[in-house]
Image (cartoon, rainbow, N blue to C red; front, side):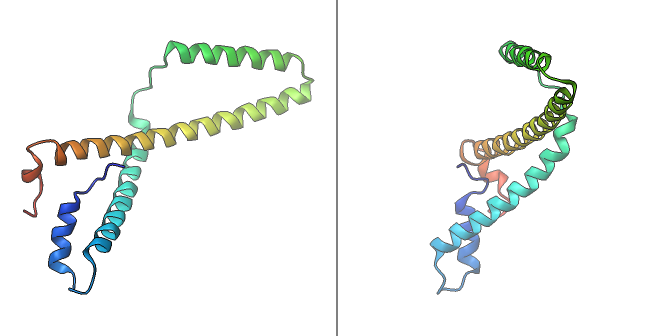
Length: 137
């Protein structure tokens, strides 16, 4: 997994602050894990706030065709049911639509975090901006 923090930056801080009897390797792993988890939480919160601000996603034609097949199968099934069964099917459809909406949000948040990681790595490791970017140097 791409990291959001440069391990060299953590090593520099750790060397200055750590007592001599504490291993730098374990400290780097622990500090990186803590930083990554904290950043994920912050970015997840930002993504959640941004979720409703984006324009609707353009749905591909292939996805629309799959939706049409699902709708056709749903209509066929519904036509075979009693009134009570139709109500149960509609309740299921509503619950499933809510689930899909929530899952879609999870995918958005995951993509938001992955996109941030990608951009952060581009800045830190693949550009000349890296040294100017770091205030601690």
